[in-house]
Image: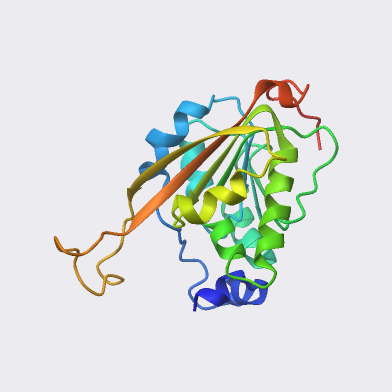
Length: 223
């Protein structure tokens, strides 16, 4: 099943299925991430939400006062579902069909924060995973402004993720957080016991060093 997560056709079929409008969030909802995320955000910041699917993350950020969030996904169906649902929100809160491996905005876009909740994990399940992750990370790095933050939520432990993030091309400082994964009763096959290692989620907070670009924080051109 995990191999399917790297397949664009799998996600398109999933979002076009009978339960497509039932929103789904990988790992945690915004409330579970807020204490880790908000120290790196200002209300006026421009955020890129990577591989959004039908997650409630952007909506819940909006409700908490972070209204400049652009969410992308390669599934046209997911983007339509979320665009229709959120069409009454402000212009800088929107959903755009776009592949995380080919992030293409008009010249001048500069994001304060890019958030990924499970997208890199999915890419690592597909063909050409190593090169595709490197390509995606380069895209992310290039759209961040000079103090921008890449906030990556992953099930991958540091020994499986840090070597990608520590690519010498990327001039950023990395902080790692670890916390328990929320698992619903219907998904849990057996309870956690004293002799069973619980399931964890990791957050990799990658902050660009100030000298890595001359772009001012929050600068962008109108699309």
